[in-house]
Image 1 (cartoon, rainbow, N blue to C red):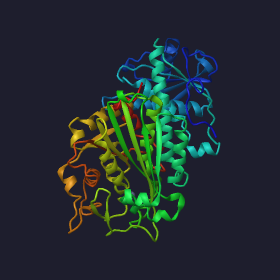
Image 2: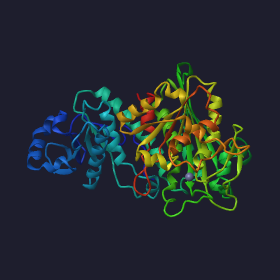
Image 3: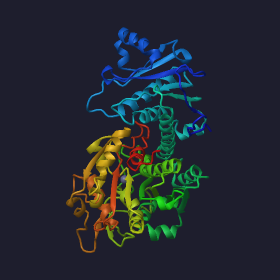
Image 4: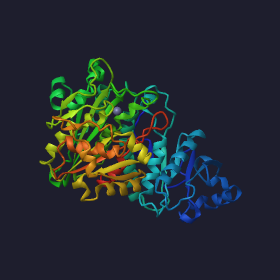
Length: 511
Ligand SMILES: [Zn+2]
């Protein structure tokens, strides 16, 4: 199988010259004149001449014969016009398209020029990430050994800043390797990434890493007792061994626990396939539902980033709620009354609202442990509602509970996202987003989802999670991230691995 990971001095190299030997071409990001990003001295006038000949180079990537660079070929990949509405995402796009164009041209050993653009403080990091993203080959392609051949990539920064540039490169490699893990899990088809197969993939991904321990809960009785809402969702899937639910607990601890200042606790939705259950998804609405594990995949990716970059100030607990919402004779159905681990009676109203069930008991468990942890911050990450996508398109919806909101945490994630090219929208949880989840008849504490409510579904899902996990009156920071629109929609877009970069940025995981 083709290797998945990037390693410095193995398939990624830092070069001090655009004439370094053993490359088959060079990629330059072309910024608009007004951005004042200096071009490499050796090719500045060459590029100037080209832009006079053909303005089209400012619109789309082009390949030129150029004797001033290694390999004799130059790919010019433009950012296009950069307006005040753009963020560093334009750099990522230009880098990604530039590398794609280079591969199309037949290059196997491209050298990327990583410029410093003052408008984008993390521009170099994002530029490299965009380039590496273009080199990602899905797991199932790698396993068939049909990956496009790529030998290595060189990275060249114009200024004399070797030490700080090496740090940027090391950050980019760690982040990209974490995103590869996330994309592999999120993008694997529902059989390749069944709960059982995700567990073996994770064990393999963290094997030999002394900073991460893995605990897997898959005993039928324990799942039934400790995670009753998840158990209800996966009842139909229980008939098939490889589809049985599994809870994966990942724990990252730095070597010196006395330096830890914050405990991050993340719960991820890992529904490996969502048929909708008895409320089956009709028409074409089931297509793409293997991506319903993207939240759990992102949790694993964040832990991976920590295991590589080894932040000394963080302890991280990651919980992957892996199950499958199948349909069959043992399916849970609307009208069932199920008692959550927190002791709430929850009326099933639509089996397609399974994500909140899959995470509810794990979230409760985490919130119970949180009180014993130092400065805890709890997250849920999930492709939870179509409403998040309808509200915000391909951006993450971030929602703080009262404690997290007191520190403006969702806004801080939004800021971090803008620095690393992941768009985040802040949504506010209102009182009605909590109360709408309350049961309407005697004996019902909660309804799974109020089917009469037509608006605010991504916010009221957060309200449900707060209520079912008994977080309402607890003063613990909790942020819910709905990535239904942001995770990448099959069969149109690759898995995006959001919000791994934003979380690493906001929690200062980077070197
Ligand atoms: Zn669903």
